[in-house]
Image (cartoon, rainbow, N blue to C red):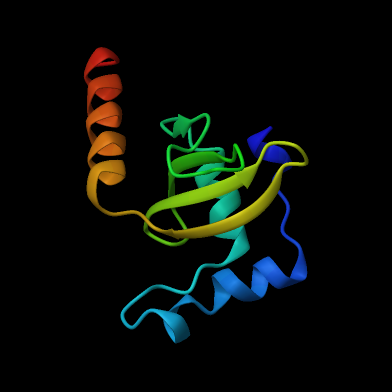
Length: 106
């Protein structure tokens, strides 16, 4: 499912203009979200613990952005709902999981 991610025009405008609504926030490019959801180390929360609609939360790294993104996806049609630069517990979980997997492969 993550590789099938797509964005409608309204949601694209929304993620590309985050800094207008949240001072200091990063504007997000849709190509970055595609990289994040296909990251081998991604963390998937199904359902997203904050979603009342049963959306997925996918946390993954985007090489083009240079940071970890949180991407909210509607599993019914693989459409993007929103995305942001990851912080807090989701970032910690991603980094700890990646570190553990890297250690197993050494």
